[in-house]
Image 1 (cartoon, rainbow, N blue to C red):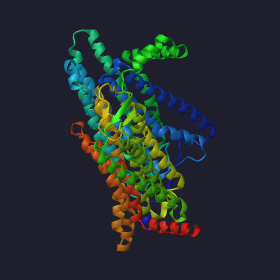
Image 2 (tube, rainbow, N blue to C red):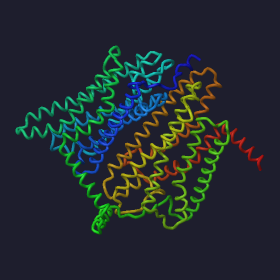
Image 3 (cartoon, rainbow, N blue to C red):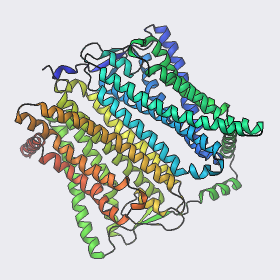
Length: 638
C-alpha cells in the first residue's frame, strides 16, 4: 500500500499570475494579442520562405524551421494559459502536465541546436563562399535539422522519464502558469536531487555545446570580416549575421538565467516573468527581427503581397487570357490517371488472390465489427482499455477498407486504372489511419502503464473525457501528417510513366514515377515517419519499462501472470505493426524494392487488421466471456 500511494495527485492547479478578475481580463487580451501576432508572423515567414524562389537557400530553410519551432513552442504554453485565464479553476491533469512539459523541453532544446546550426551556416557562407553550395547541400541541411530534432526528443524522453519517477502525494498547486521543471520539482514529496542534477547536467551540456559552436563560428566570421578590404563588403557580411546574433543573445540569455542557476537562488515570481519573455515574447519578436533587419525577406514579402493582390483581382475579374495562363501553369501534372500494376498479371492467380483477399476482408469486417458490438453491448467491458480496443477496431476497419475493396475490383477488371484525385484520396486516408493507429497503440500502452503501476488511481486518471481526447488527438495527428505528405506529393510533376508498381497508391511507388527530384518529399516522409515512430515507440518503451518493474515487484506468481496477460495482446499488435512500418518507411531510398514492399504491404494493410480482433479475443478471457454472453443473448432473442 505504501508503494501504491506514491503518486496520489491526479491533477495540478496552476496559480498563473493573479486571481484578480480585472487583471485576468487584461492579461487575457494582452496574451491573446501576443499569440495571434506570433502565429501570423511565423506562419507568414514560413509561407514566404516556401513560396519565394529567391529564398530557396540554406539560410532561409533554417529560418523557416525556426519559425515553425517558435510557433510550436508558443502553442505548447499559450493556449492553455489563455484557457486558464478565462476559467475559474485553473487545473491541468497529471498526464496533461507532463505532456506539456515533454513538448516544451523538446522544442526548446531543438531551438538551441537549430540556432547553433544557423551560426554554422553563416560561418560557411562568409568564410567559404565559393564552397557554400557544396558544403551546405540540401541533404546536409535536412540532416542537420533532423539531428536537432533527434537530440531534442532524446533529451525530453530522458528528462520526463526521471521526472515521472518522483512522487507527488500532497500539495498540488504549481506556482507557475505552465508545467515547468523547477516548480514541479518543488511539489515532489520524494528526493528530487537526482532530477535536479540531471536537468543541470543535460542543460549545461546542451548550452555549452551549442554556445561553443556559435562562439567558434562567429569567431571565424569576425576574423574573415576584418580581413575584408572594402567597408561595404564588411557591412553586407555583418548584416547577414545581425538578426541571428540578436535572436541568440535574447534566447540564450533567458535560458542561462532560468535553468543554470542553483536551486537556492530560485524565485518563482521572478521566473514567471522571465518565462513569459521566452515562451511568448521571443516567438513573437523573432519574425520581426528577421524581417525588419533583412532586405531579402522584406522584398519577398512585397512580392508575395503583390501576387496576392493580382490573385484577388483575377479572382473577382477573370479574363480568358488569365484562364489560359492558369491552365498552362497547371499542366505541370499531365497525368490524369494511374494504372495499378497489382500483385499478379496471371489470370489464374488473379482468381485465387480475389478469393483469398475477399475472405480476409470479410473476416476483418466481421471480427472488428464484432469487437465493437461486444464492447458497446457488454457493461463489464465499459472501461478505458476496451474503449481504446473498440477505437482500434474502428481504425482497422477503415484502414483495410481504404485499400482492399479497390484491390478486389482491380482483380476483376481488365484495366486497373485509378484517377489522379482518387489516388491522392486513397493515399491521404491510408496515411491518416496508419498514423492514427500508431498513436492509438501508444495511448493503449500508456493506459496499461496506469492500470498496472497505479491501479488505485486508474479510474480517476483515465477518465472518460481524457480517453476521448486521447483518441481525438490520435486522429488529429494522423490528419496533420497526411495533409503535409499528400500536399508535397500532389505538387510533384508526373509527366512520364503512369504505371504504379503496387496494388494501391502508396508513397514510395508514387515518388518513383515523378519526373522531378523527389529528394525533399523523401526527406519529409523519412522525417515525419521518424518523428512519429520515435515518439510513439518511446511512449510504448517507457510505459512497458515501468510495467516490467511493477510486475517484477509483485510477489505472487498468479498476480504477475494476471498483470502480464493484460499486456500480451497489445505487445503482439505493436510488434506486428511497428515491425512492418519501420521496414517499409525508415529505410534509405537506395534500398527500396517495390516487389518486396508489395508483399510487406499486403501484411500490414490486409492481414494485420484481420489478425488484431483474433489476437484480442483468443488471448483475452474477458472478451471471450463477453462474446459468450452476447451469443447467449442473441440465442434467447431468436
